[in-house]
Length: 183
Ligand SMILES: CC(C)(COP(=O)(O)OP(=O)(O)OC[C@H]1O[C@@H](n2cnc3c(N)ncnc32)[C@H](O)[C@@H]1OP(=O)(O)O)[C@@H](O)C(=O)NCCC(=O)NCCS
Image (cartoon, rainbow, N blue to C red; front, side, top):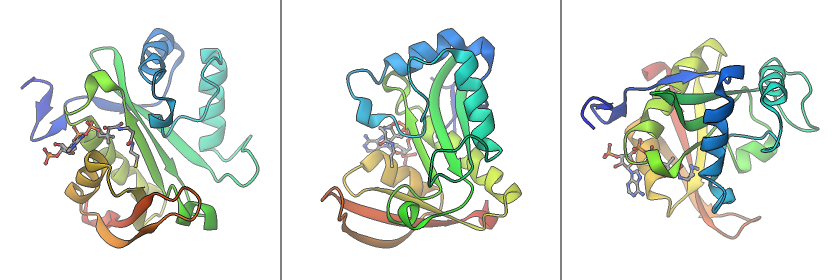
């Protein structure tokens, strides 16, 4: 465990999906089969061939082939020892809908790799990517009872903007802003 984690951050790295990730992607997605609602940040059809997934993620990052009302978004995975352990999406700008739910950044970690600093590692790395896109403050939303996500966001300087019951889901939700320039 010590070699995998330094200071609460996994030793893995942020990667874009590649054709060589076919097996690792299948294994990653299989971890969400019993709890599909826990998969945030990956919007491809789960049965799509790897070539299609790679091409779509690349197109979306360039603002192409977007679904109506979507904004350009970049998707990365957290890779360590050949496994894809987590996924994270960065939306390049906010819409009224994203301000209400979703924010700039959404992420999920596969069950087998939780509590090893993967979410922390991904968020830290993606906050650096924000700077290149001109995002100065990143908005993150999460359920108030999602202790793992609350802790991850607060650890990275998330300042609570407000907490209220979501009109759409009825769940109590939090809105956090992270000052990107402090990272
Ligand atoms: C929430 C989630 C992303 C956390 O991922 P993770 O890789 O396990 O998180 P990390 O290991 O980086 O932990 C980050 C911090 O949160 C804490 N934490 C993680 N899971 C926790 C939990 N279930 N309860 C309490 N604290 C938790 C860790 O202890 C750590 O804090 P510390 O450094 O002070 O010890 C993961 O549980 C997940 O994918 N859940 C389902 C999808 C989801 O909720 N996505 C976020 C939507 S807003």
